[in-house]
Length: 258
Length: 309
Figure 1 (tube, each protein chain N blue to C red):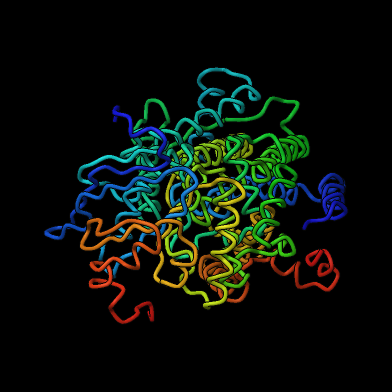
Figure 2 (cartoon, chains in turn cyan, orange; figure 1 turned 180 degrees about the vertical axis):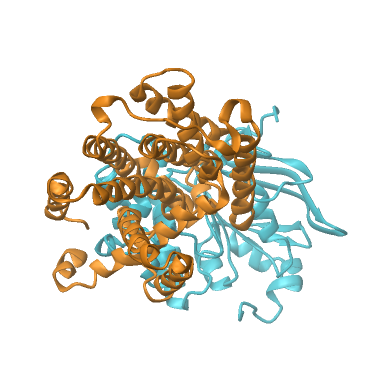
């Protein structure tokens, strides 16, 4: 810790490395995400996307390199402190509070965001209700606010997780395969929603995604990982035209059937 | 879901009980209240925090011994001794919980069991302080609370206040975050909750209220014994909570009622078969009524509209 990252970047990794046994899963990745970016991180299976994500979110400890959030070195901080510093995320496997109501899911995230979660004296029922409803409205779940969240459809649970993540007012939102398990039309709807929210609030979004249609339709910039390192980076059109990318990735038969 | 009317009816019933019931039943009700508090405190962890403790007798016993020792050896008045009981039990829970919440699931349960047995062993062996196997005798309330009726009302007041406080905690922002931790610790961390610290705080609160139950029981029983900390005692709140329903705040209280009444009915006639019968009932409840006895309430026709509302 100590050294500051480049000014003006919301999220930055410098020479980030992680190996598992003899496999160099992430091999010196430099990533620079400016404010308001809508960044896709793509790559073939085994390219290191998920490991890279888990390094940023503190789920896995990295071997070397540094991670900066808004210029501040956050390497090695536990998840709850990363969350406090403005890193929001959703998980590859939908991660909500299943036996709480839809409203309570978001209310709880708001209670924690406002640092009221140690309060044992107040009644939580009415706290941040309006704010929670506003967030649910944004993701289109108002009508289901009273439902137990675990019985909603998969797509709606994905939306709820988005609302939970937004409740912490993140500076950067990391979405790990946000459309996994969704039908193609749902995928586009969800990512349009993400883009709209990012556009309206100036939120920075970084996401991984298997569906190239979704990636090229949504992302402002794309970073391509290959064998644990950055192969290419640029606007969608540039990446699509990149010969290396075509060779290792785009030219391959489409994956994602699993 | 428990309506105000039902609560009022319950209050009136327990308030007039001493006027119509024989002293024996008054003692039974007193025990039900104490066990109900113990199981409700336990269920703050199990039902609301998703943490299964196999060593909660330790905190019950710490409360009981703290109260008994202060009263017998320190000459401290009962009310003060009872006020110290949850502090001692809570400190014990803080010390042991610090290590226990670092583990999850089976390992959490096993370490809590191990610490419980350590407390038992210390009480058992430290004869000069605790009286060892002989326990501490003559731990009685002051004269004005000595009659079963007076002590019954006293227990009712303390248990009522404690349940009210626990209910407020469950309903508070802390309680919401605790449920979030139960449902999904990974997600809870990423809304900014320090999961271990939250679990530890819940552990301390649960331990402290278990200590209140222990202290009340010491003066009810007139004596304390190392058995209070033994692991078989730790299963009592678990069985009681399962009987009544762990997903409802009042489940453990209902479970305490069922447990004690069944115990009285069965073990009076066939004391040898009580554990067998209890085992059978627990199996039946877990398989047929996963929501516990309280779950039955929701199946009654008059309870339906409230559920949907």
